[in-house]
Image 1 (cartoon, rainbow, N blue to C red):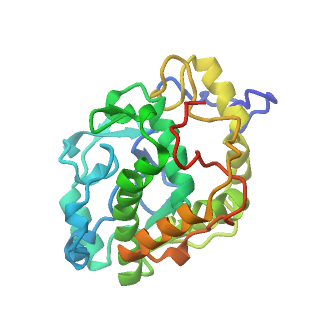
Image 2 (cartoon, rainbow, N blue to C red):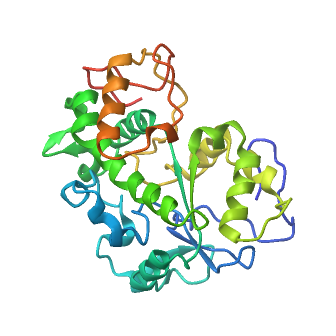
Length: 300
């Protein structure tokens, strides 16, 4: 792969260049013998194996995910044709039933949830959906998302959906701590190479002190490089933006996060059985990536 900004070549210069136009973003990826398992799933889903204990949370089955695709492995798709990247074939079969059974018994493949502070997650996803090309994402209950206040979106939709996914991994991590791991996004961003290496060790099941090209991969994933690739493609990397817009924003909103909205969010999540101590909470008076409490935010 060529760094579009520096011109540096990562990997064998004689090899075929990475084809971003063919790359679709999984959710399955062929590991090419770099890990214990042949394939890895990267996407949104409730934790495999959780269905057996979901009844411990009375609200779980009554709470809907706020957008499709948030629970990819349990949405009744045709899993005989699951999209796979980095492979010669475009699709491969997946047995969700076997995956669930193995995970429930604690003998399946290792699992991990990389999760962000729920308020930052909601703010980021709110703006992502506002500028999404599909009305499935840019509307909520028949209304344009841009006409809905962030606060209404947060407490009426985003937080319950976030809790539904998070609690599935939280409960399974408590049940099978060696199988399921929780990884704060903020830790990954602060120390990407260290945290990513630890995550790869968990997923591969083989402790290693080095992963070839890991530091190169971290550098290639920097914002300005990904935006350079998008400029080359003439579209967003995930293909969901209107026109050639990007879901990676250069700026950050500088509104203050009011302590009241944070405390209310913590109270709601705690009442749903979420271990709020797992989150990296911003200080109540810190500037951050949050919309105003009572106003809709225009897409950046």
